[in-house]
Image 1 (cartoon, helix red, strand yellow):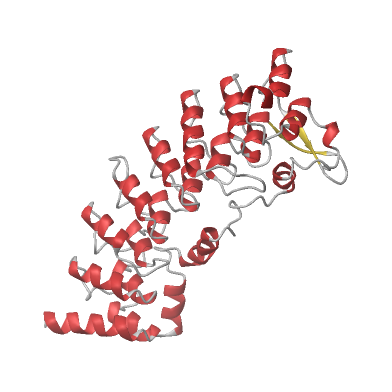
Image 2 (spheres, rainbow, N blue to C red):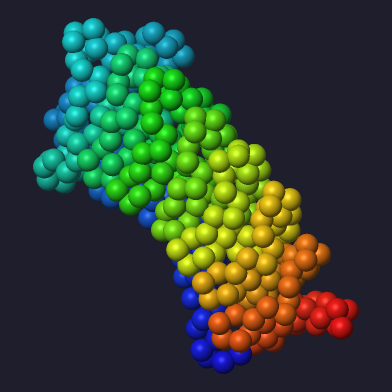
Length: 347
């Protein structure tokens, strides 16, 4: 394969390979949205520390959250400090300043409910929701909602189970939370839930009419799930009629293209997509097919599934290359032999 071809496939935008390398990091908690990478996120996630700098300069509600004894099994006793403040008329939705740990200067504004979600104590989160905290209030830097935080990666000190997260999201929705809010980077909560492999959260969001076709950097929840072989999430998404299994990204790629570049060589998600109407010979803007993608990424099992589903191996892309050419260029013998045998069989 020529260097031009290599460049073309390396930049293969149907599966968005330049981003796929980035997204492989996502699945290992290295995506910029997967961990607390900003200063105020770090401050929030470490907020329960008793030696926190400038802790006593924060709003009383935040101090009460941080001072709560989470080992206390008596919920009434555990929440007494917070309840006393609310009974005295403190607004549960007040915007509180987060102070820089070294200088004490304000670096962000955030609601007590969002702080509670970062801290991850179920009783405290429920307390704020049930006492009128605004479920759609966002923090100032990334415009995250409480649902975003619950779908996100685990922050330092969090111990929320998957079921806890889903139940809390369901409670937030019951109290008026909007599920399709986009944060500053145009990421919806459902993207975070897929990236962090939270099927329970995905199901709750979909039941509340989350948009399954919303794009983040051009990629939908289904394409992200398919790329990472998250079978349960793919099942949930395609189980809702609103999900367009043949949705194309800005370079014409479909979820089947993504699945064909799978992190693992498993046909599970390929089978699911095909059984729900995915077009096996769909071509992106460079006329690459899913079979070409499978050959490029050396996915012989996926390639075999595509062939059995009727993949046309004679299709050529904009550079005049077919699936066999791709396998030859990449020197992936198993894919090359699989394609050669199928072409020979077809005569």
